[in-house]
Image 1 (cartoon, helix red, strand yellow):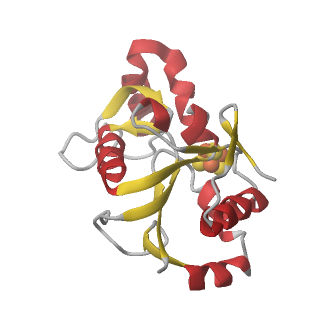
Image 2: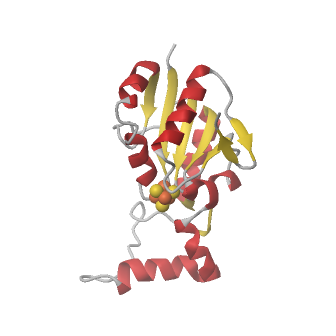
Length: 181
Ligand code: SF4
């Protein structure tokens, strides 16, 4: 039976997913071995149940991130923090240095100070998710089985992870990082 695999994009730049696509011809091999059930590269609206492995790109920045993350955790056997934003907070967590007023500062900068036309922060429901007061790495919100660092993780590391997962061997942990070999 094929492994049911998902990939998710939270508060990140999509660079980790680009690195996944850098697997090049290995993607063709993967296609025979896994069933991709949810990902930004496909059009599935609802995170499915009974997922074996989910790679999570990006930090937890807003209420929407948090909501789907809890859903993913409940429906997935193995979560992988995929890339430095997921592992440490990285770039999105820079705003934490602004302290308690970080959410207002970020919205002001993005929608008012940098706007060429119609400078105002969108207020309607469903337009801009409520930002969390503090950006966190994924493991501060839910339990994570494995960490795959890098900005982005090199395709070779992603391949090594997928080979080990597919072979049924458990990737070795060293500190908070995956160690291969
Ligand atoms: S870890 Fe780097 S490449 Fe990946 S989402 Fe964050 S900034 Fe982008």
